[in-house]
Image (cartoon, rainbow, N blue to C red):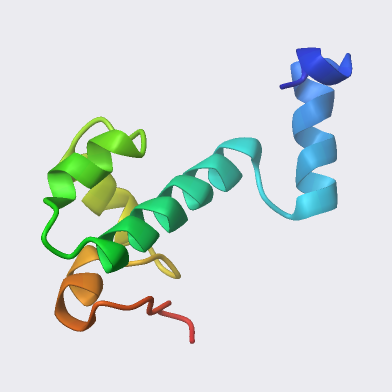
Length: 89
């Protein structure tokens, strides 16, 4: 991404964090988790493993490890209720 806007990776990362409040990797992970959460809610019969792999996680374990952090989405919550629930709400 930094190359596309003609910045060094370090400067781009600092600028991104200053403007958004997120690290580049944290933002990307958050987007992947949101997409996975949306798919789980829309496709309750689909395996979480398939959704995890399709959204860029290396395994279901990696997806679960990232999704159980504070203020993250938990896959079980989607399976039980079929809608989005954010832990901070």
